[in-house]
Length: 487
Image (cartoon, rainbow, N blue to C red; front, top):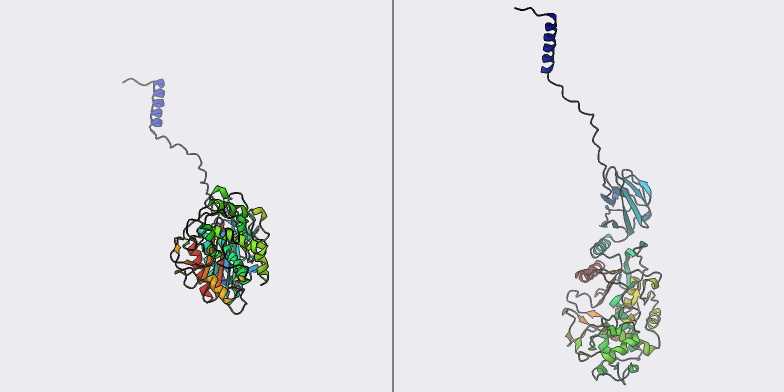
């Protein structure tokens, strides 16, 4: 055997070392240092709850919770609670920040806040987004107010005003929501509202006033050479010459054209005088006067002209002078444009694309252009309700005539369950406790008032109207329920 020389030995050792080194497992690659995961910040800027807790506020017999309408909160507390120093309970996300009227508010250590005016609650989430809520708080009857709030919420009504009277004295009145949304001006009991067709009762009252004075009879002829309004000439059908004052008052004139809030262009952009002239010159009398009830604004436009011709005053002047004799104020004529509204008049808001200022209420004053406060309307009702505490405006015999329902006529109103008197609805089977009532509807207006057999009368006025078919019945039932509370 050959001996290995030194050179071979060194090579063998080097090779063995290389084999051993390569037989070892390679170490796992080193991972770079991980960054800690970023914690997402909460975006919750919502108001979880709001209330006035009994435990925190004197004058509360139970916790008071709001009716929420988006970011608008309506809330009523009892009359004895001090609205200027109420401690609210506000709950939000634990990492959200709260300000009340711009001042930091600790939900875990709440302090008193002045709620006599609109209160702004701003909630800023941990991530920085902010949502602002508006609280409209008031003293009042929680049972009544909460139902009004729900009605407003359902029908998207910015503002409502109501009044209830018993035995000819007001027992409850309240304003809700906004008279002007852009200014966030609150409705008060002193705000004027359009009455829409509740204006017709004022035309009826004006005519009955002239009737009691012997200046007009219900069977007086209106048109033609022998008519009160002979100024419109006599070139009309013989049927038109049969229309009486009473036919106008109970919507049995036979005219079906509406020249007051018209759909026909021949009446557009004309004065009331011009519209009536256009009516008698061009419109047909579709029913024999006195035979068919067809509700029509034209009838009360003509009645307002009769008042002017007989009295020598404008219609507005006549009713204001008449009501002034009984110290009744805040009932007058409205204006067409928002820029002309009276200082204490609400703004009106159309829905479903309707223009709340698209109707000529100035020329239509006797049919739908009167504005009033609920307080003034209840004061007026006390003078026409057969009551004994306040002197009635008319003799009992005159009131009997005004409130007597028509009989033996064809009713085209589509509602066989009610009848019509002289400017008043009556005999509605759904409301047997209402001997007389009337509602009103225009774009931006929804109203109802009624006289109750228990001498508990009431009114609801709204500065908008939805086109939900339930709105009128719901409002009427609300009023009936409120009256029942005070029987």
